[in-house]
Length: 144
Length: 376
Image 1 (tube, each protein chain N blue to C red):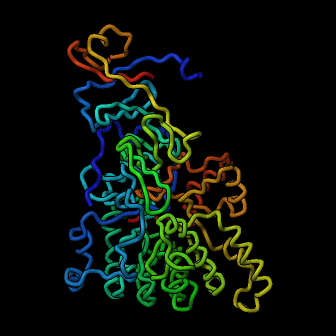
Image 2 (cartoon, rainbow over the protein chains, first blue to last red):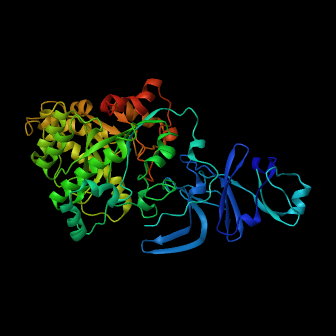
Image 3 (cartoon, rainbow over the protein chains, first blue to last red):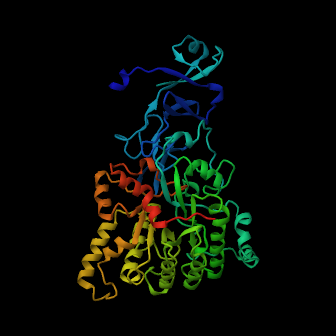
C-alpha cells in the first residue's frame, strides 16, 4: 500500500506533562495543521481540516458512537473517540480517520502518535527544534 | 446556556484564509444583543420594559421555546463563533470583525436579527420590540461598522404597524431591506399583507424573507414532523408556498417595483416550481385574471435568492444547469454566520464559472440589488 511505503519523519510536538488526558492541541508541522488529542491517556492525531469545507476539527466536540437497530433503541460506545466538525457536524473516528457518513470513501487523514522518552528523543532522528529535550521527561511524537 | 469551552489554539482564522481573499457580500448575517438590558432596553419605553419583566414575551406558537435547531450545536452556532470575552455568537462587533468580516473580505454584510418581536402574540409589544431592534442595529452595528447594513424588522401580522415602520425607515442608509419570516399566519400573498408590500415597494427597500417564523402552522402541509431534519429541509417548502402565494395573489403584478429576496430557502427547487406554475397558469389563468404574465416572468424580474445553505449535488455540474436556468444574476452569496450550517466562500461554489459569474455570485448581484449607501 502506498501509505506504508511512504517515508515518515517524526516530530516532537508536545511534552507529555502539558497534555494530560482530556486535553487537545493544534500543532503545525511544515505546512500541515494537525489536531492532537489525549483521550484517556491515549493519543490521536488527525489532519485539522474537515474534508467537507475545511473547518478546524481541533475546535470540534468529542462524542461517542451511537448505533441503533430501530427507532427508540440505541447503543452508546467509544466515548470521546469521535470528533465532530464545529461547522456542519461531520463526524470522524479518531482511530481511523473514517467519516461516519461514508466510511469507505470520506475520511480525514490520521497520523501515528507515540509517547517517547527523552533519552530516545535525544538520540534522534526526531525533529525537535522547539523543544529543549530532557532525558527524564516524556514527549509526544507525531510521524508525518 | 453556557458556551462550550474552547480548546487552546495556536492561531486565528485570520491566518487560515488566503491573504488576498475574494471580496464578497454576505447577505445573511445574524446579530443578537449581547445584553438585552443594556443594549436593547434603552430603546424600549418603560411601559414595555415593565410589561416584559412582569408578563414576559408570549410566543404566537404554543409550546415552542423558539425555532427548531439541533441542540448539539448550542445557539444554532458554529462552535468557534463564541466571542472570547463572552456573549453569544453574533453579539460582538469586534469579534465579528476579526473572526468573519476581515478574513473573509466581506464588503457588505446584511444583518438579519432573528430575536425580534415577530414571534410575539401581543402585537403592541411585538411592534415596540421590533422598533427597538431596528434602533439597536443602528446604535450597535451600522453606525459603527460601514460594512454592516441593517434590515427593517417589522411585525408583519399587524399590517398597519408594519407599514408605519417601513415608512419611518425609508431612505435611511442604515437599512437595505425589510425583514419578514417565512412562516406567517396566512400565506404572504393574501390581501391583509398587501399594504406592507406596497409600502416596501414605494420605499425602494427590497423585502427579505428569512426561513423560520411563528405562523402556528406546521412546516409541512401534512401535520407536525417528528425530526429536526424535516424542519430544516422544510424551509424550502415554506418558501415555495409563500412565493406561489405572492405570484398567484398578484402581489408582483400590483407592485412592479417590489423586490423580494428569499433568504435561507435553498434555490435548486426554483426551476421546477416555476415550470409547474407556468404550466398550470397557462391552463387555468382565468381563475387568476390579475396574474397577467407567466409566473416565471415575475420570479425572474422581481425575486432573488441567497445561496446558503448551498446545494451539494453528487454530480457537481448539475449545479451549473440549475443556476444557468435561474440566472447568474439572481443569486446572492450568504454565509449565515454565525450559524452552524455556515457556508465558507472558498468552498461554496465547487464548479468552474466565468469571472463575471463569480463576481456576480459573490458580490456584485448584492451590490446591484441593495445599493448600499454610506451613513453620514
